[in-house]
Image 1: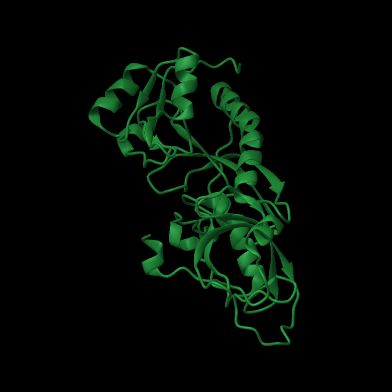
Image 2: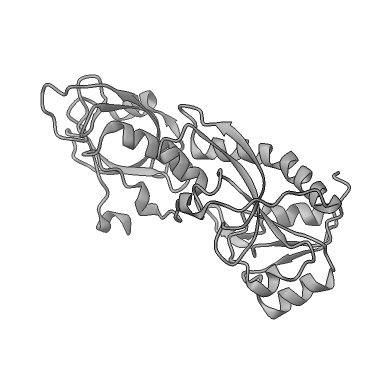
Length: 302
């Protein structure tokens, strides 16, 4: 509805999804099909075949949003108006694959959207526009991602309009202030309860819904271990007078940490749905002295 025409959509190829691992197209491909817009599904946007198809559509501008593939120089130089990227941080802070996650993990109070030109160096292009937003005290990376998407849409159209009429301002980034938001892996979510509770709380928020913050729960009665993902927790200031080992549940069923404690609010046991911690407690007769431990490399392969 912007007044601009989408000539072609390029998206990732279908991937196995769900418990049945049936091959499923991206939601972008499904939308393009529904709207009768030409689209390409490729795992290599820089291949000669894909470049030729993009060149054939004779577009003025290419827009990249959460695409997940590096854009090569031949493609960058193809459209006359260049390529722009919608990025989930206030650049130059948090260049890289996981800017939203790392902003939450690091306890940032504010983040936003940056629309930049695409250049050979990752997320180092000129800034065309930005929009700021506060990060909620209990906001997960998933919720923040969805809010930023809503903020990004009108900002993107406004930016494209300015590129089209020649009024866009291109501002160089201050490379000395750049920080990196590296790609996440599952092991980043393995919780170490010897760390301060506030650090763990931010990690739990910043890694939900993926890769999730995981631990092994061991009830003292059965000592039968259960892998869990923790999706929400609150900081509880605690002097730990009993000197309980980190990971132990105290008399209030809070998890003792290296400093202070965590009151778990949301938890997902392996093979089960996400639930309130009180339901987890009731279902497993959880009691003081039960333990949450860090996943080791052997557990990670299971």
